[in-house]
Image (tube, rainbow, N blue to C red; front, side):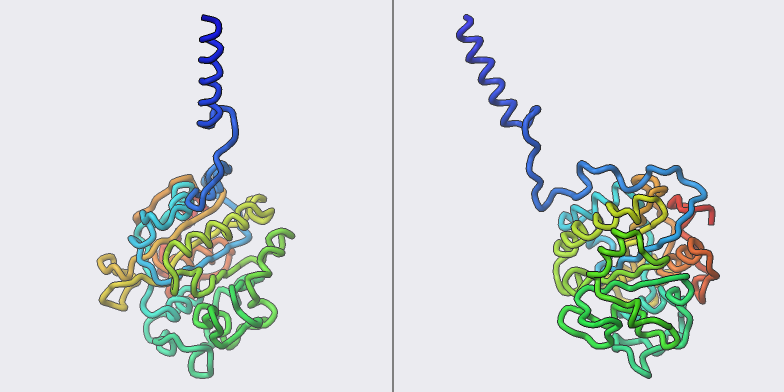
Length: 321
């Protein structure tokens, strides 16, 4: 019997070793969400009055809400939405891309968006003297993936000028110094040198404009943890918003308050230390709400249509606004 027991013990030990037990951790695959095994980036500070001195926007492209939320192509995004906040009734302003970037950063609406009815590159006729969140913030920087030179006004390869709003503001000072390639972001994060307001634009593949949703998700799974693991985020005064410029497949460009058109419905994630994990809100928000929230957090007055927009701050644990 003792010999049989020895054989049995050896067999059980072998099985436990192969199945994990107290042995090696399974090697993550490309589909393993990047948040697995890490502390949650959200919900570790109690919701309520919070002090955020750095606001980051990360904009993706041309996907309606149902194309990204719940999609099997978005494992990282799904894990981030479970860990943080998700606005389930969030809307773009119009179509095509450019007027959404301008509306969100300036509060312009209606006839004032007239110069931006197409995806024109920055020029005398495709620009504005309006004030923007870039000018309002005490400091700002736009980080543009694949942009060949600072504040570039021309499309080049995977870089699209229409996804880079600062060059469209004629009165905005400092564009060549502050509108920079995305490669600058890592250094600013690691040295805790983020400006008050940051705008991140992936290139035409990684923002899902020209490539599948899965390509954008893989990019997010690499880039977002750089932000969340950085000293700038860990110190507790940085909030990250991720949204899409516009949805697809709709039949109207009147989207700001349109809750019935699929092309007007996009996802918006809120990532901050004080956002309750798994927080969901079905309140109607849009890009003007994002601008209003950011202006409230940074202590500057609302611009244009943002003055009448509902802030997202309270429902996502960012403050009492």
